[in-house]
Image 1: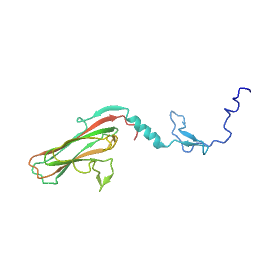
Image 2: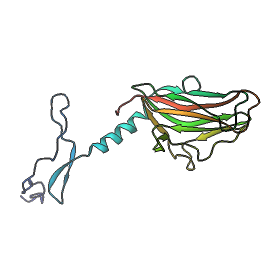
Image 3: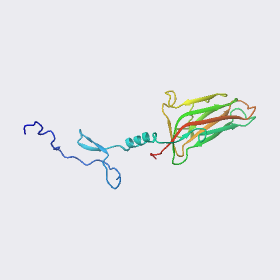
Amino acid sequence: MGNGVEGLYEPQQFPVAAPAGWVPAVGGVLNLVGVFDTRRRTWVGLPLDALTEALVAAERLHAEDRIDARNGQADVTIPDASDEGTVRTQEIEVPAGEVWFINRFNLVTEDEVTGNIRISRFPKVDDVDKRYLQTNQAAGEDVNYDLADPGELGTELRLVGGDKVTVVGTADALTTADRDVTLTLFGRKARRLVE
C-alpha cells in the first residue's frame, strides 16, 4: 500500500476477442502470429504477405552458389548472309527448386547485329515476354547493366525455378559472317524459402 505501484499492473477489464483467421500449427502447437489492435480491442492476424516478404529477405542471406558464365550464359548466332531483321533467341531457365538473385547483365553484340533481353517474370507484351531494354543494344557493343542502379531496376532481379531470361539477337543489316549476341548473368543462387 504505500509504495505507489497499486493499480499499475491490473488485468485488462474488457473482453478480448479471439484472433481472426488462423496460423498453421508449428510442431503440433498453434502459434499466434499477430498483434493486438488497441483501437478495436481485438487481435489481428499478421498478413501472410508480411511473412512472405520476411522470407524473401531471408533468402537473400543464404547464398549457395555464384551465377556467372558457367551457369548463366546464353549466346545466339545470326548466320552469315542473314537478311536485315532476322531474329534468333536463346533462353536461360532457372532450374526447378532454385532461386536466383541477378545483380548484373552483360550483353555483347558483334558487328551487324543488335541485342536485347526478355524476362519471363515481366509482364507480357502482345503475348511475348517484355524486353528489358527499351531499344535494342547497338551492334559492336559490350555493356554491363547493373540492375541495382536507379536508372535500371533499382534492385536485384529475383528469379525462381521455371523463370526464363532470353537473349534476342537481330540482324541490323545483311550479315557478312556468322555474328553472335552473348548474354551473361551475374548474381547468386540462394536457398529457396518462398514458393
